[in-house]
Length: 100
Image 1 (tube, rainbow, N blue to C red):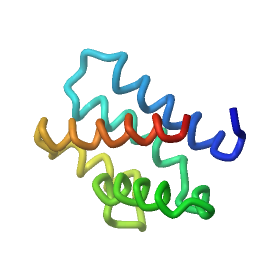
Image 2 (image 1 turned 30 degrees about the horizontal axis):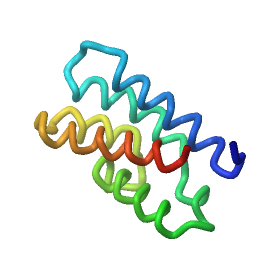
Image 3 (image 1 turned 135 degrees about the vertical axis):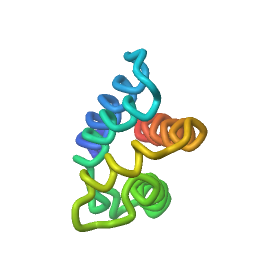
């Protein structure tokens, strides 16, 4: 496997695992998954505009405020409906699939 996106793959795999391996409400699982997703930066995708755009969309849904993304992501996710949280979880899973 290519090492180009190794850091992103590692953190997104952990996020997918967090989403799948719990019986907690989807919002709680997504909050925990965010801790891994937020370890990835947009700069990691400088060579690939499509991946950069898709990752930016995930970040935008989690935390539009760039100053304190972790806090904003937790607050945003905690107030999501089940439908909204599932949509973001799907995007995280789809993004991981594209990285592999």
